[in-house]
Each structure stands twice: as C-alpha cells, then as structure tokens.
Length: 406
Image (cartoon, rainbow, N blue to C red; front, side):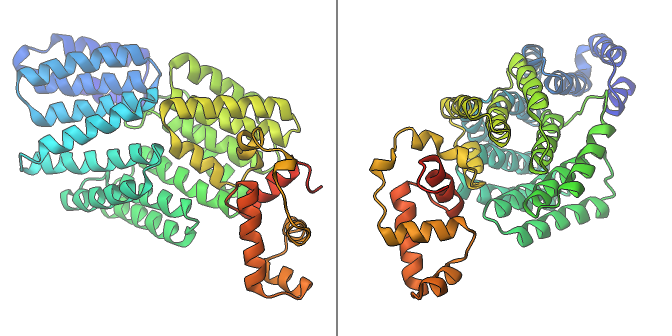
C-alpha cells in the first residue's frame, strides 16, 4: 500500500520497482491487494506509453480476477483495457467491450455493480464522442452522471465535463460553463482536491476560453497544469498530459505563435508509442499550424495524413470537431474533387459571397443590396450547397481556395 501511494504521489523508477516487488511478495490469498497493485502498475505503463507492458499486465490481472470470480475487480481492469484501446485508437473495439460490460452488469444489482455501471456509462460516452455518435454520447453522459452522483463517486466530474464538451460543440458556451461550474462545486462539496481533477477542469475551461478569444488566460492556466506534472506521471488519465500540451499548442497558435516544431515532436513521440488517436489529432493540428505559417503544401500533406488515419480508425468525431472550427483546411479534400468550373454561382450570389467574406451579417447585406433578409438567407444557403460546405467560414475558405474571391 505504501508503494502504491508513493506511485500516485510522484512516480520514479525506484517506486515502481518497489511496487512490483511488493505485488510479487503477496500471497495468493491476498489477491485483492495484488489486483490493486497491478492496477497501479497498469496505469503507470499506460501513462508512459509502454503499451505492450500495459497489455501484458492487464491480461495477467484479469486472469487472477476471473479465477476468484470478482465481477467488480474484473470490471475495473476491463475499464483499464478500454483506456488501452482508446490510446491505441481502437475505439470500435472499446465500444463493443463497453456495451458488453454494461449488458452483463444489468443482470446483477448491488452497490459495487451500480458504482461500476455508472463509470462504464461515462467512459462509453467518451468513446462515442470520438466515433461521432453524439446523440448517444449525450444520453450516456447524462445517465452515467446521474448514477455517479447517486453513488457519490468523484468521477461524476467526467460526466459534467462530457456534457460541457457536447454543449461547446453546439456553440452553447453558457450551458457549457454551467456544467463546468457544477463539476467544480461537486469537487468542493466532496472535498476532492486532487490535481488530476483540477487539471481536467482547466483543460475543459481552456477550450471555452479559446472560443472566447481569451488566449492569455487559457495559456497561463494550461502552462501551470503542465508545470505541476513536470517530471511526473499522471495516474488515472493516461492521455491528460498530451491533451494539455496539445491544447496549449492550439491556444498559442491562435495567439499567432509558430508551434510547428513542438507539434512535430509530439507527433513523433505519440507515433513511436502507438497512440494513434493522438497522432490523428496532431496531424490535423499540424495542418492548421502549417497553413497559418503559409506552408500550403505541408499543410495539405498533414491534413491528408490526419484524415486518412481518422477514417481508418473510424474517428469521425475528431474530424467533425476540426470541421466545426470552420478552418479552411478542412475543405481541401473536397476541393481536390471540385474545380471553379464546377461551381456556378450567379452574379448576385457572387456579390453576396464577397460581402460575406467582408464579415457582413445577413441583415447588413440585405440592407446594402436593398433586398429582404429572407432573400439573402436563401442566397447564402444556395452558395453553401454549391460549394459543398455547411457554414459561412467554410464557404469563404472554399471560395478562396478555388480563387473565386481574394
């Protein structure tokens, strides 16, 4: 137990070795303690990208839990296996495993299984978001949150964080801030002050601050979180540090900084470790960084690599998230199939498009052209349809890419 606590406080190789020795010394009848020690060792391996070792330890621990017919310990270890699959980008397998786990738990009802079922529901929701199944994810976040609150589980915070992310995706920032406020109050009421939870909250808040253009505030908060874990391993969330670092790079890029070198280093490290979902996100972020730096050919290559990987892994949620940012790069794959001769805008539609590109609202365009607001909205919808996009910002980016507007 002392070795386990030491690993949670600040991992060093000596502390990991001490925990390994302690686990090996335990008798077979102390299998619960052995399982908990193994779970900590699994978290260490996952967080440090030693995925082969993590898989080996998971298999060994699962075999022991099954020998003793412990549904609760087996469930905890299977959730760690879900973490492994998520890091590897194997979200479809994680989806099927979580579905099976929840179905099996429904046949048993006790305090332990209710607690585990709530965690399964929230973890499943996070997987579904990345797979692009947002309506299901919202339902699972909500039901998992309600069950976690009933069990007084601090991990209910992930339910609030998930709902906040879903609200932010729909540009409902006020609702997103409400969910994060509820998460903060939950931690205060339960007197949970672990840096792990605080950093997850900071990550969620920074996304909203980025949407609001509060770059300095987001950068300061993210940098403080990364400094807190400098030289340490995060247990309980194997992707937290990479996500913080990626978010910090996105904030710095939005503030006008060149982050290409840092992103490329992160990509190479993630690729070497086999963190394919993270590699996909890094390729797409690199595409944006290259584009902001005027390196269009490198941007196109990075984008295509990211899209190829996301489609191979089925991570449509990641691709959708970047498309919803309205960045012009996200229509390159469409533009490769569309030429300016394929897009036939009327003279009036081209004028409306140029005014949209100037940043004018539909009402301002209507007043400037002495037309009704309904007519301008109709023109805007037709422009989007002809360009094959779904938003004003994407229409502008596509038109610039095709040379239709300056």
